[in-house]
Length: 356
Ligand code: ACO
Image 1 (cartoon, helix red, strand yellow):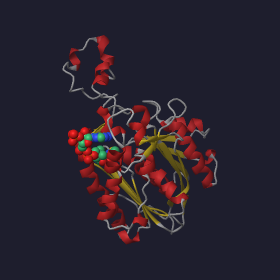
Image 2 (cartoon, rainbow, N blue to C red):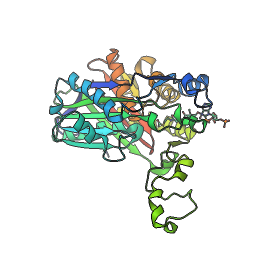
Image 3 (cartoon, protein in one colour):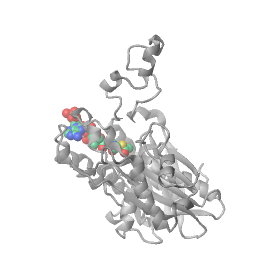
Image 4 (cartoon, rainbow, N blue to C red):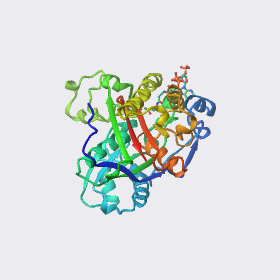
């Protein structure tokens, strides 16, 4: 059972920032590479356009630096005052080390701890929960929590990959989570879940150390010189194993059950109801999923914020980007009850309820 009852110390979002690359890629632009249409993409996903990072100048970490710089400034502190980094991404600059240390280096922070979270679409909410626990125990005061993705580097831009590649976009969001003893502000509770039964339904298999069942030659039969190929070989590339794989309808069916469930869990834990929510920020997976959740929970349009139309699905970055944009537009005010919710690959799903 979740433990959300540490003493009186809580965490609050003291600063928030976002960054999306300037390069806009419309649905029409995608039709130059694959057999798709603006009509199909908008009807099935709600997406009109997304941003793609510059191929060479921008990485997951450089985008995170942009978002984090704004979040830190808005918190009224300096990078040297950050005590810990929690970085959520599925598209790291390197296979290892993770982006947390790259962000620490780029922002010239002290030799603080840096942790990478690999929970895909629910990565930011997981990261926020991890940071929240560190603050509640009194271990840290200011934690930088980041979600950043450069999807455009690894999508199949042919008709073969169209069910996935049209969905994703690049960007970053960051918050400074800060210790507070104020009663009426901050994170009320977080709720984390997983079910690995369907792990392969939404996954990128390689590079990885799993047995490649689709290959006819068992590992033991490989000659010494061929062993390295098991990690990433031409055959894997031919089988599109280096691109994300998704059974879209299966993800959809599970998402529309788990989203409302984890939102209700957060509300019930705090003795609150859907009517109390001022703003729900759902992970921007697909506009149809968000609309289904809104309908199921009988929320008004002004209680839910969506921006997938302009950024696509930015995975770990989508919740902080949407939260930041909603706040910048004045749609979230001091004292508002804000619910963050996400569902994604794993499957993992999560929610966080906070008083702004
Ligand atoms: N353009 C045109 N046609 C396409 C495209 C495309 N980009 N992609 C797929 N199609 C075709 C398919 O080939 C199929 O053709 P067929 O009937 O001739 O076989 C047809 O469209 C229907 O395919 P489905 O996959 O059944 O389409 P669906 O209506 O389910 O929409 C989608 C696909 C958008 C992926 C949907 O299943 C979905 O949103 N699923 C949820 C998954 C999700 O949100 N993922 C987000 C990323 S993961 C995450 O955030 C957790």
